[in-house]
Amino acid sequence: MNIFETPDLSNVPSTSDVITQYLRRAILNGHFAENEPVRQDEIAKKFNVSKIPVREALKKLRSRRVSGVCQK
Image (cartoon, rainbow, N blue to C red):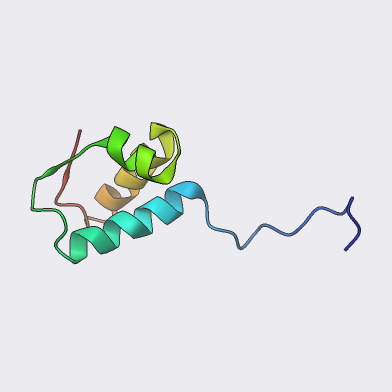
């Protein structure tokens, strides 16, 4: 690959997608109780990201009706 060629990143998941999958597995595996608050700042710190991708991940989970967890 030429150093000046742009790599194909079309199959690379976004940060919010990675966090969505992590939270989905955590919820389905019982790591969060139903309606237990999920602190955006704690998840963001765990992934070393801002709260924005965490917020996006929580929105995705709610839209898929996976989340029985409250956002805080």
